[in-house]
Length: 159
Image (tube, rainbow, N blue to C red):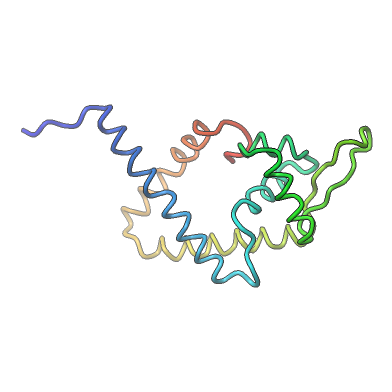
């Protein structure tokens, strides 16, 4: 009877497979969405910031950087790009004029909704190509993947 892998070997195997599969899945989905997006699709870093600002409207650059595990100067550059593109607004905090609060524009809301719609459509199409067992396994894994994301990055950015 063949020996079964030790729990540590099994964890290492799953970790390695996920580390290889998830970025490839994300890249493939990003390419398909970019192909079908009306106009130039914002880069993933900009979309991540917009998603976060949508969930936490009125957030600051510092809070965004902390939640997204980015440097504040990089987030500040993204904010400038998104503001110039008409996707984000900086508004002065009424209590502290030195603080800028971030708010998505209506255009940002529409573009994020379109990205979500395209992502859902592409994933649904791919899911239809899988077997019932594969779809069931993926459906069962969604909760575990969400939990894994929380363990890798606790806090609001893992949502």
